[in-house]
Length: 440
Image 1 (cartoon, one colour):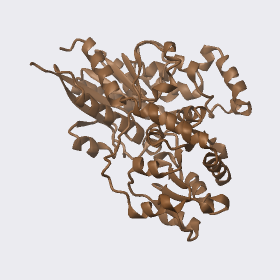
Image 2 (tube, helix red, strand yellow):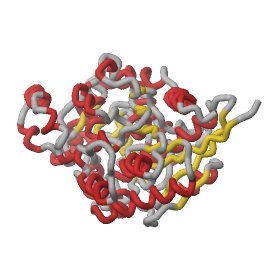
Image 3 (cartoon, rainbow, N blue to C red):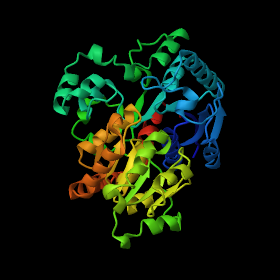
Image 4 (cartoon, one colour):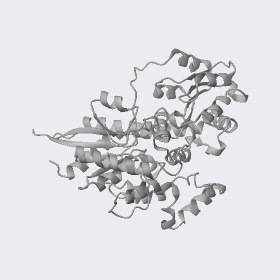
């Protein structure tokens, strides 16, 4: 049978572990579940990323686009702020120009992008618009307001009200105001697009920048089962999309010693990943130095806070293992009674895959919503960023340990994850959309 080569460009915030992981998992699924008459040639756009070698090792291609960035992280590379993914208009212009130039050279049939407005705009600003597919952790269309689990804490004026009242107030704000809240506007990217000659529909906010032929939502489908009718037909809820590690991956003997089930001591796993600052991690370490925390064992990942400094805070306290090395997170979560985490989707889904309740802090708006969904389902506790301290963290962990309902709720979400095949669902939806574009 004749097979048509389909050139698929994947472009996302490739400095971010969550977006990079989702992009790689989608690429792998597209190869695995391709249709018999189409052969994908998948090319990742990178402006600099530590994930480039992983992509190459998997047999995919890399296109190095301008401007070249260090590839360290979103804050370091893009100057990300609480309201802007890209810190300056000048950098946003360079990023859009670089993507347009890349598409002009590659000539893709489809551009796929994550939460990356740069690609969502560039594919429509090239001489002949390229069809687009967006994969995101949340349904980022205006109707999302109807299913928002809580008002983002970045809108500080609402935080003074109890949740029922702040939700009522937020939902009664006129659309033309709500659609223009700073966390949605992405002013630097929006203005850069206009400076570069944007001629499409008016760009009000990030919903307009991410608009695509298909939006694949990689969140737990059970969060939206009762509200799918709110969303347009091009929004597909496909389920979690994260890498399940090889079951044969070894666990450090020191971790097994700390997390020995025979000890009878509660086991706490802390993973703040790239979103966690040194100050955030210090507060976590402190919970094991006083009160009930003295009776807890822990494994703490410390990617940015020097391990020796973290250990100094423990003052020789045994039963707490701190490392900056890779650990098989799925296996460690399965051994833990509670996971302390940031709100990254992949990290949370890995914990819930094991049915482990969560205490979390949101470093970004998306993380706030991820944690709020888990909290609303009774499977965890979200601590506001301005209340993230050892006392509140310890109190939250103790609350989960003393109430079996948190574990029961986490196990219910575990079944939601395990009963779906997010990778396959996403790939099938994407191939169906590509097929309708008649590239055959």
